[in-house]
Image 1 (cartoon, rainbow, N blue to C red):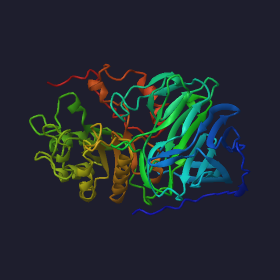
Image 2: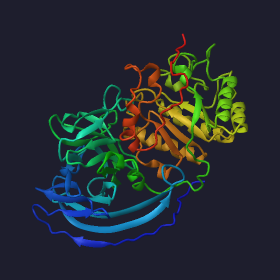
Image 3: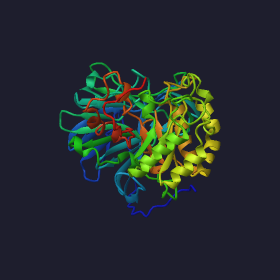
Image 4: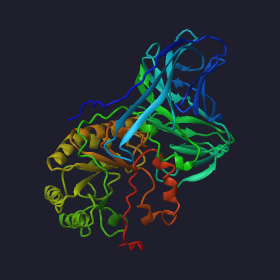
Amino acid sequence: MIRPSRSIQTLCIFFVIASVNVAHAQAPLRVSSPDGRNEVSIGTRDGAAYYSVDRSGKHVILPSRLGFAFRGLRALGDSVRMESSSRNTVDTTWSLPWGEVSRVREHYNELRIQLVETTAAHRQFTIAVRAFDDGIGFRYEVGDAGLGDFEMTDELTEFAIADDARAWWIHANVPRPDRYEDLFSASPVSNLDTVQTPLTLELQNGVVAVIHEANLVDYAGLNLAGRFESRTLRAALAPWADGVKVRGRAPFVTPWRTIQLADRVEDLAPSVLGLKLNPPSRIQNTSWIAPMKYDGIWWGMHINVYTWGQGPKHGATTANAERYIDFAAANSLRGTLVEGWNLGWDGDWIANRNGFSFTQPYPDYNLPVVAAYAKSKGVALIVHNETAMGIDNYERQLDSAFALYERLGVHAIKTGYVNDKTPEGHAHTGQYMVRHYRRVVETAARHGIAVDVHEPIHDTGERRTWPNMLSREGARGQEYNAWGGEGGNPPEHETILFFTRMLAGPMDFTPGIFDILIRHGS
């Protein structure tokens, strides 16, 4: 079912190899977007590699550090020279099976610079830069010489913001570590602590910039750390439990560090910069994948009308599920989500995270019957998989659970990762969980299942490669109107999401509450 797909493409490539003059401070090399407005410069000063970004002659990122720190090894990037460079231009068009647009033009100019250490190890790495009309992306491609197996303690990438821009942000570490469920704040960039991406910046010179990442694979998720009264932000990768940021073996490539660029905030939304920096789809037949509106058995738990666990108020019964399916069919909703259907919800299910079964329903819920009923009504049954961050327990059951859903004609799941960390102390946005999220999406694709994730890693454009990665409830959504400490979500919250969180990709806000008085059960 899955194999590399081939798009009809128009490709123009101009390839130039250039030797670079070695000097104490090497003159920067520059690459501009096809429209000439966005420009990235790469150079060295006192042996250290740096980059900068301009838009229409206005500074966006001042010269900023590049490099890595490794356990037991000298930092990479502090004593280097530019050895060689190459350039090309790509102009190609490809299709999306679903989303904001059906056709995407991928048009960029690329500069690749090989840097070599001037010290004895002579390790080398390449900075690859792509300049688009809607922004830029750069990444590291690190060779294997002198590195081998490594433990990265820091990525040293910095973002020296050109002025004290107004930043729209949420915390990365408080009140709940590595979660996206917070209200956005606005403040000068010099006041930032550690924040999530995407980070939207309104510069005083009129440029709007959004810092994020693309194609996050087997690496740690990107946060940004500020320094008090400084406009320089530094990459702050989410660590493993022991503090190491990334484990791997050279050669390796990093995710793209992206900076979306525009002249007005409203011009940010049409950009699909992250998608353009991800590989093509690996799913040949995508006809079964589509976003949807859905209802579901979930809100009743938040207002104490239903319970997830078994008992007199158990929400996920066969009869109740069929009632919700009937409502969906009568109101042109394409799906019904059922939470609390499977064994494991009784008692302290967060602490007992390894007690969840993803195949065995409660006695009052007949999964095959509900699946067949939904199909007869033309409604997609969305099966809920809450893990409570019991990752080993979930991964042991992935294949058997997804095979069961496939046999029953279920093509959508919603996963959940309530809990701040795994039992071993791994964060949602660290490399351990990045690997897990990708494993779930790939396994789901093999079984014809689309995925909606609650408590996810942020979107970095994976849906181009894996179109079954449908959405994420990775923000402060509708459930906070049931019990949010601030009295629920303020009216402006949703308008801010459009220019911040949703620039990363699709979002499941779980809207659709009909009783706005919110009558709680006892």
